[in-house]
Length: 271
Image 1 (spheres, rainbow, N blue to C red):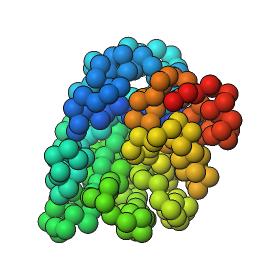
Image 2: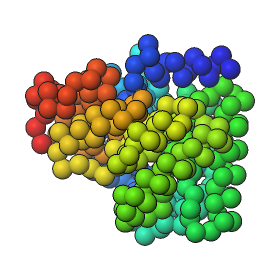
Image 3: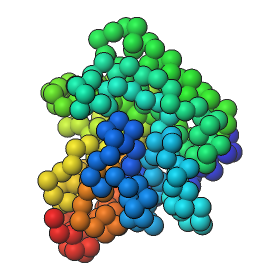
Image 4: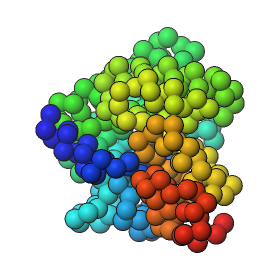
C-alpha cells in the first residue's frame, strides 16, 4: 500500500493537521454565491491549503489549480445522494454512483470521497447505501487511493443535538469498520467521544455559513481541540470578503494552534 501511504502522508504533510476547502456544492445546489464561476473561486484558494474537494466533472476544468509543484491535492466526490438536496426538501438519502474510482484517478484525483447515510427509515435503502459506499472504498484500496468517508445524517437541520451526536458517534465507527482511511463529519457537543472511537483521522466540517469569521474559526479550533486531524470548510472559507486571508487564518488555527481571536487580528479579517 505504498501509493496510499504516499498520498496520505502528502495530505498530512510532515505530520501536520490538514485543511481542505470544499467547492463541490454545485453538485447538489447548483451555482451558489462565491462558487458561480469556479475558475475565479479556485484562484482565491490560499497556497497553504492541503486539498480541494471537487465534484467529478470539475477537475478537468480546473487543471491549472493542481498542475504545479506545491499545489493542493485534488479530492473528488464519487457518489451522489439526495440527502444533500435541501432546497428540494429531500431527506431519503437515495445514493448512486457519480464516478468510478478509475475514472476519477484518470482525471487526476489523488484522494476520493465516498459518502454514506444510514438510519434513513428504510432497511433496503440503508443496505443499498452501504453497498455503493463499500464498492467505492474497496475499488480505491486496490489502486492505493486514500478514501475520505463522509457521514451525513438525514434531517440534519432539524434533529436534536443529542440525536446528531448519537448518529455521528455510531455511524462514523461503521464507516471505519467498512474500510475508509479518513472521515468527514459534523461537529457534535461530545465530539471527542467520536474521535476517540475511530482509529483513523477525522475532519470536522464547517456546515452552514457562520455569522462571523471569528465564529467559523472558533468552530475549527473546537474541532481540533476535540481530536480532529483537520477541517473541511466550504461556505465559511469561500463566502467571505477575502477568502485567501481567511484560509490563511484557518491554517494558523488548525495547524499552529493560533487562537481564533488572534487569527482574526493577525489577518485583519473584517466581516
